[in-house]
Amino acid sequence: GESVGLHLPTLSVQEGDNSIINCAYSNSASDYFIWYKQESGKGPQFIIDIRSNMDKRQGQRVTVLLNKTVKHLSLQIAATQPGDSAVYFCAENHNQGGKLIFGQGTELSVKP
Amino acid sequence: NAGVTQTPKFQVLKTGQSMTLQCAQDMNHEYMSWYRQDPGMGLRLIHYSVGAGITDQGEVPNGYNVSRSTTEDFPLRLLSAAPSQTSVYFCASSYSVIAEQYFGPGTRLTVT
Image (tube, rainbow over all chains, first blue to last red; front, side, top):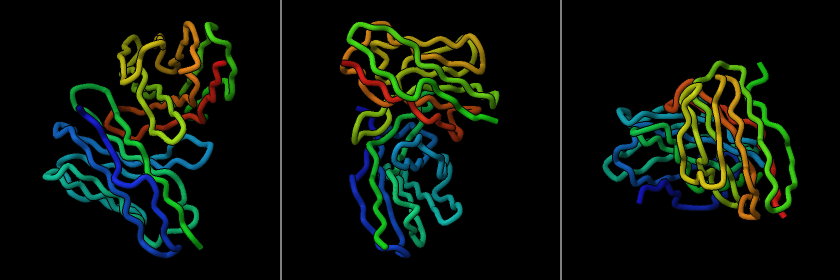
């Protein structure tokens, strides 16, 4: 069935290192992907998005890569900081309607 | 702008009781949605609306009703609460489904 999933449930990195969070999707018809960050006790916050006609998009310290051939999405965080500690979710839009489907999430822990 | 507001923040219900979770946004967004988030899991879409008067089902709609009589408000109704509906509920809005969604702070619901 259609699903959005993550390869790793937890990721621990040293402060200052780069982080890579991965996401696999199964619906080849999805045309929009988005990453959210959720801190404990709060609602998700938008990080970055990408449309299916792009392979890469950069923001401030973050980069999203989309590989449509293998249906894989990744979020790269440069120079990871303690404030980056949170759960990160990828989500995809099924272009047949208004559904934005979320993956399970990866918990990022940054060690000082 | 207040953004997306949700009330109440916390609620305890007994099995069989009914209640309405309120959601409002002041950004004139057409798209609004409700998600539930269970411990250690991602967000699952309950219902969504692409504009006033239009609603549709998400991934887990059973046991929930919605209506969208105005652009600003999107209440979620539980007609007969069940323990399986214990969760954190998030409302979100955006100008389009393929755009950044703004999330409310969430409602933590416990059904005993």
